[in-house]
Amino acid sequence: PIQPTEKIWHNGQLIPWQQANIHVMSHVVHYGSSVFEGIRCYGQPSGAAVFRLPEHMQRLLDSAKIYRMSLPYTLDELCAAVVDVIEANGVAPCYIRPIALRGYGEIGVNPTGSPIEVYIANFPWGKYVAGGHGGADVCISSWNRLAPNTMPALAKAGANYMNSQLIRMEADINGYAEGIGLDVNGLVSEGSGENIFVIRNGVIYTPPLSNSALSGITRDSVLTLARHLGLPIIEQSIPRELLYIADEVFFTGTAAEVSPIRSIDRIVVGDGNPGVITKQIADEFFGIANGLKPDRFGWLTPVKVA
Ligand code: PMP
Image (cartoon, rainbow, N blue to C red):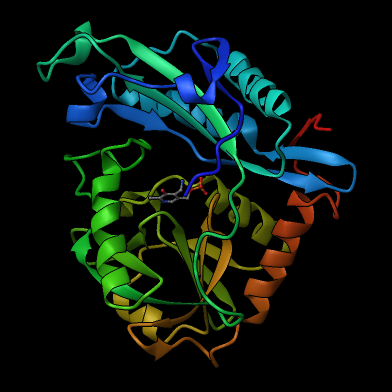
């Protein structure tokens, strides 16, 4: 269960957590009309810092634009709001959840008569993908990811997560930590809340965004880190069976961070232990996020917490 903090940012003001409520007849409740973000703030040797804050808030603005929601805040204002709510609550490390939704007003499907409400909450959140030291046991889902021309996969919209819930619940009842969704053509897309990377013969592969994957900020970070480390990395469509013969497979996401996968459909990945390339990338990622390695790409926004 979620651990409440004191304040939530709402339309420019900090309000008590308990008062951040919406009416049951709000447009979002009936039609899933929301766009949101998930961001992490990491502990640093001195203080704390938000990981890739402007990139996340730009993605929020992009998601809103796709759905014709005009948010009355600039990128800078949204980034400042995140820093404000973290500092007001004094809770870090934490997970940050900004959301823009269509509120109370219109009950028809056309949302133009409903006001847009923006909220930003932060709260403590630990490890997301279950799995022991060797990584997570996952499956291929019987559910496909969103088809192009139906729900836009590049928008991080609340409604997309009905598809994610089907994938995740099916995995769970069958005893897996997570499910991997294929796109409508049967090519690997992503997990219910994570992008995926596959390594074979020293080459790292990840599906391009055209395979119905979200434009993950962690995915982008891994692409950057791999290039910096001189590791060959290619955005390329991945057939399902490449997962079964891979040397290493890992998930990435803000919640998932860099999470090794130990088996897929009970077929063991490599020798069943996190591989060397996965470890190299994870070390670099956590090193920067936790302030133990230089922030050479300018990914961190410091926050002041007591
Ligand atoms: N795909 C989906 C469907 C997700 O929900 C997420 C989490 N936001 C990701 C990928 C990973 O994206 P990011 O690294 O930006 O958190």
